[in-house]
Length: 321
Image: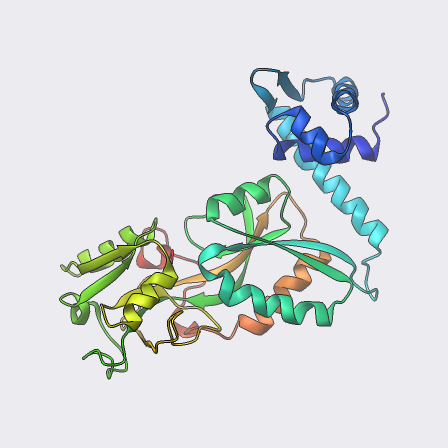
């Protein structure tokens, strides 16, 4: 049987991140011919084709190659853990690559970046902020250890750990007639000017929530930035509906005050969760980071109204903003 080196596994584990062999070689600081030879040697050892290399079409992994890359990443990760010496009673050392969903990153990431390194000074956090699709792709390619996302419409093949509960809330100008109420219901809002956060699937979620009550919102403006929703609310141009977030101040980016009220009954109830592929082991560093996130953020939200898992097909399975 042909020998396989750890370096060969490291090189192949990185290939799913690139569309051409030349791009992969440049990133890995190796010549394209040397990388090609390493792949050929692995294919000879495995006895199967692992990838298709065409100059015109770039690099494509075969199904066997995709599985081999996943297993190679795990072997490399396990070896790194041994080298870093992260066993019981030893200080955590090394990198942890964290992904965070873009719409709540500003409310979550600063807390983690400030506090976690003080507790684990030997760990270096690397942050990626993106859409759910971008984060899932990065997890699958091995570019992230764990990602924080809404526990909504997630594909199979991921393990998850709850961090905090979240639900849709009403954002109002302090002088709005409804701002004095302690809670609001969708019928209270239907006739009021609505500043819509126009993003998938937020738009459909809110429309469906109103439609389930035989109502529809009165849309005054459609914007694609949460900060702009808050700015328009802060100027009294309408109300907004946004998912609750920890560490959020009741004011717009312009410094204008905003009143935030819960909906009763709750709408679009969900969790923010840490997820990682179920065929990968969570590193001690990533596990410690999730523990820290739960410690600092886990008490946020109305936990008593949150289901243990988002229910398929119900309002608990439709968070987005």
